[in-house]
Length: 208
Image (cartoon, rainbow, N blue to C red; front, side):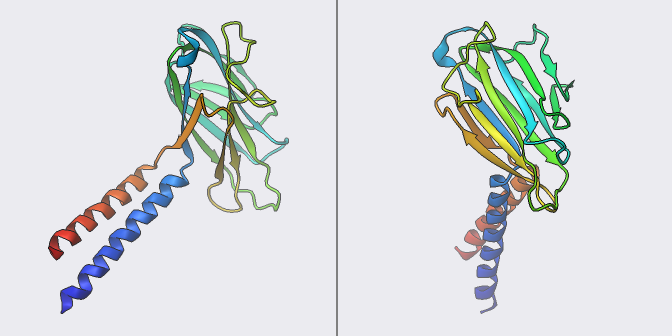
């Protein structure tokens, strides 16, 4: 009689853990960006990344770009505004109205990187967002590639500060044939998801 109450409770606990983990995956502040350039043949090109506030001054925020793949390390990147190179990547801040990285890349395959956002909370009713935009150019550094919007972006991610705690990331994919983005799960979310699935497995075996 007692076990009939224990097993449903165990399943509910496991399901709650799994659902909590899934919510964490969906609201991750780290995003994985992939640009498929295989349709343009093997050549050189340029990737333009910007992290700019909607207006200045804005509540302090930063974007860390790392886990780079397909980048050309033989050419020195062009940094403008509040952008700094650091081990394995680049850190953007939104302290000026134009923060830009112009980096040589290898076209003909997939370019990818992770971008992680962080910022202070903003209790004001009209919080100022900052926009992380992604553009691609040909070898001349002028000819835009793909089908960008009026600002030249193939993809943009908006960092929106919240009144308390972490902010929110908004995603806008302009050219889905080239650009794609997915959340990078936090380690704690993976642990909760694994624990939930393990508990579900235990409950199923005990019931059997």
